[in-house]
Image 1 (cartoon, rainbow, N blue to C red):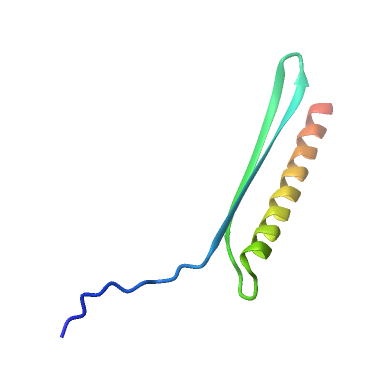
Image 2: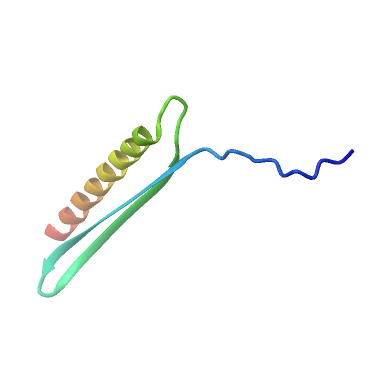
Length: 75
C-alpha cells in the first residue's frame, strides 16, 4: 500500500544577521562595509541565544574589518 501523505521534515531553525557601516572619508567620499551570516540554531540553544551568538560574531567581525580599513586609509 502506498502512502501519499506528505511527510513534514523539520529543518533546523536558522538565524540571519546582517550589519553595515558607512565610513565618511571626507571630500564627498565614503566606504561602505556590510557583513552578513546565516547559521543554524545549535543543540541546547533557543532562537534568542542563537541570534545573540551570531549577532556578536557579525558585530565583532565588522568592527575588525572597519578597523583594518581605517588603518589602510590612514597610511
